[in-house]
Length: 258
View (tube, rainbow, N blue to C red):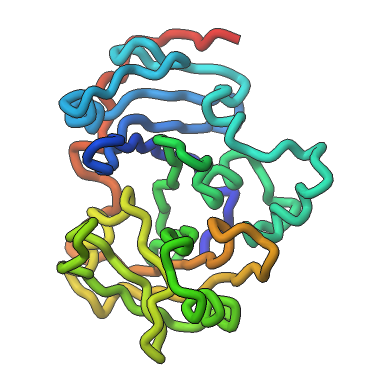
């Protein structure tokens, strides 16, 4: 499996508060010395839902660079000075020597309560050509108590199954996470679904979903169940390589305000 330190590219997604749809609007990269942010083609669809440029990145046609992580991202991370920082790293299942800012963003999702932004990594293949994608199960606050109790009993490495909840009255594209004994233990994050659906459509047998870690109470529900999808991509398919993830512009560079 690839190590966390190889996460060099993250995507920023924005949610329309009316339709609840998510759009990949930006890409953050780190080359070891500087961070770079650029809007992606997905922002065009977001603009049709009244998205306005972020105050940190006011111009769509600029590439922003900085030697420090941009505040819109750094403010989504727990400071190392906080007494609960070590517990937070354990929730994310990150070894302390690999707790880079990019690794923490990639694993945590950088999402806040009632927030319209989320961060997720662009996975890179390991030595065997497999891709690994971690995420925390969503929607746990909507689950009945027996489902939460089943989550608390889950074991690392336990296999889970994805199911399309076609008749969900709130979200006809919902993807549930299911145990072998038929408990629904949450949902796949909406901003990952299009890619996961594509992987399943190509070859469902090559998509393997497992429990990575269960954080027992009183850990907040949003960090309770950490999952890991492993897939072997065929036919030269690469995750998050479609047009909406491509940058709007490459050449113009604007230095981010400090």
